[in-house]
Length: 346
Image 1 (cartoon, rainbow, N blue to C red):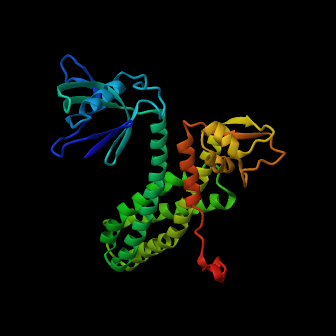
Image 2: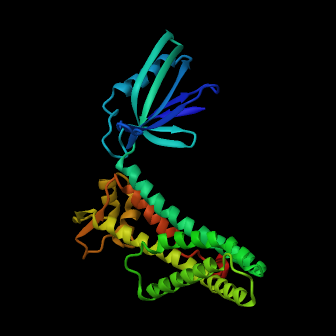
Image 3: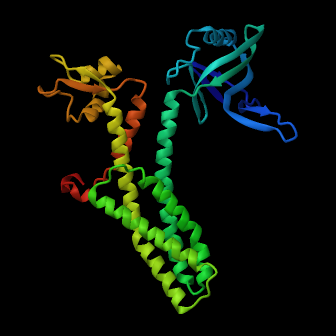
């Protein structure tokens, strides 16, 4: 096993372990004559702790390198994604501060050390978490609708027992409705046709759920079977529309969020001789980021048309978040079909 801390690689013996801890702060209130009350004050610091031994010719140098990190001006929390040091261990990646560090010198090629880190949660981490939550909602809605479709197909084969069929489909229907609405309700300004479609799908969900709830405990008769079957068929034909609305809601929600982020970006005056490539080098430190600037400013190349006086430029604190949103937009575009390619290129 190997740990990366900043620029330092640390080998850990296989029998060693790394402790990850995280606690919540609770305040206890003693109530005379009654049980105590507790108030959750939020999560306390999350620490990463281990010890080990440096062996070999560079053992003492490694120990001193960690000491230099511990004493350096980089060992601070400035609230950004650049605070502290990068910590990598297998699938774990985060920013950390060195809370405590000590070492015991045995000889030049053998130094024992103890280290404790504090994991940072910057504003950058919170934004990533929020974006992930939004993406998870969409995935949950899609899987919920897929499951509902399968459950209805199975239920249609056993509809002779009305109550039993309704019980089987009830939870799946409720979950699919809930996850679907959590996505589409986030669309603040649906287009005209979409607005009516959203109303129709919600009505289908509500009517079907009402029929299913009514069918539980009901005696199976031709009338009750016919009523439940019709409701399930209606929902069955509505699911494809619900699935397409989830995708459309995802696209519109993402587009609105991206526009909000772009509107808050700083603008840079275009000077004579400027190109997106030169601006990307100056502002972002990477000429290849001109592609991102082109996407943000809706330009087709690195050449800035003469009529444009300013361009929107991100800063490094939200660069990764913006790139992630654009990548998500691109991933939603239709895939190219081989039939569109000329025969000599297939």
